[in-house]
Length: 389
Ligand SMILES: *Cc1c(COP(=O)(O)O)cnc(C)c1O
Image 1 (cartoon, rainbow, N blue to C red):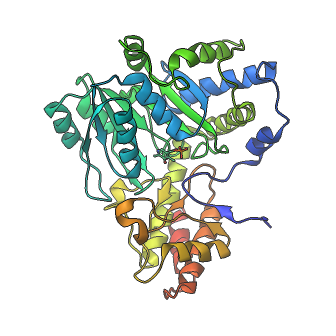
Image 2: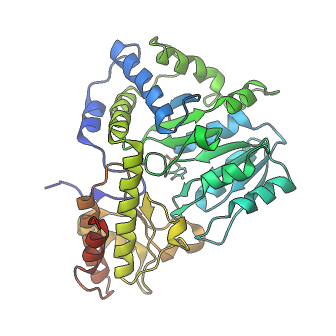
């Protein structure tokens, strides 16, 4: 029996035993041959994960927000226009970061639970041509998946750099930098990649690196400046050590193991597994008589589900009762609907059994909160959705 409840939030997520073992080993020197080899492999695997054979990977000690910060700091100069495709809290955050670096930021959004259509994004970009467009592929505050591929196609030839926040999507959703024409994409270790928190993982493709090299002003962040990190990443990938700031050695060792596992599963199979889990989770939510934050299944993420709570049920109380049942789920994050929904993460190595355990805890938690549920209804709906047709 687990000595703790299952962690089923949109990050951190459950970590595979081989990844945990790599993380738990005594720290080696950052100049140790085993670290150099693992770091070099991890960089190459990150390129593969994000579909960017021509991209420059960066693995930095920090959370996903550091990846957002690095993208903005290295690509934006004072007075540049930026367009944020905003589907929730993390779009707001990207806008705030871009403003901090001097960008003139506009947002193109949608009602809560929706996502702007690619044509709307293209119209907004045509009205005031931006240097940078950011898209949150899955906004963790709404569980809404934006159409990154469609937006990239609609912006093709506009000259804007397309930056994708894939923190709640990479390694769980389809995300293909080169094929779709994305310039920067990033994630963080603790989401669908399945490593403990602490690494920002970013890939910049050639147009982004050229824009960075052509800057007229220095990057106004010392730690996030690619000038400092590029020689380090290039050295490790070439099998040589280099130093700017001490790498998070244990997390890098764990990342190497996690990325190898992801590529072994196969990206298509992994995306299909996440889609199947999401379908099952939504089926269960419907069977419980609950709505969801995304306005349609077409914009609902595969990495998480955002069920609305029934009237009279407090999300915090529900989360506590679900935890009593053995699973940790998260409360709301979007300020406009914070008390109206909860969030279930099903990303990374999540198995059907773990999802079913979580849905069982959700059922019993709802009952404990006074919402009448038919025992087993959610589980039956999920099991039906999971069984091969
Ligand atoms: C979690 C998350 C972030 C922020 O990552 P941290 O590791 O919490 O800093 C940014 N964007 C999205 C979409 C996320 O889900």
